[in-house]
Length: 105
Image (cartoon, rainbow, N blue to C red; front, side, top):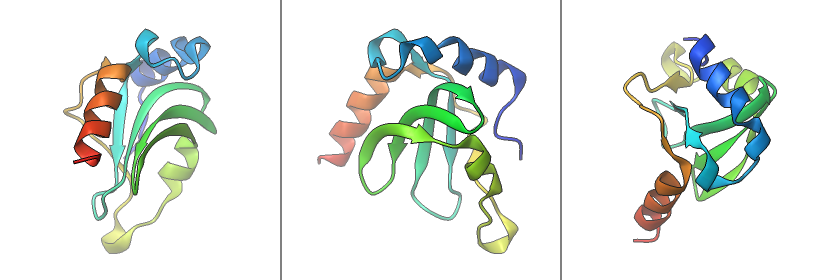
């Protein structure tokens, strides 16, 4: 599966100027490991080698990741990292607060 489409890429690049400012941008896509418990929430990107967002793995944190590296991950059963096709853009600050609360319970 292609993790990006033209719309997601355009939205993420438009928000690149906001850096890590959660209040000024939306999460525009969610990627997940179908056989694990890691999720990547894309906020902005310069290119497919440098994306910025929220990562929900062992901990909830904000940081950079590579779309290209996510695309190249080979998982068991011939699977790879997937894009959540039902995910709709949501305010990054609201999602951050929700994930932090969920993981601190």
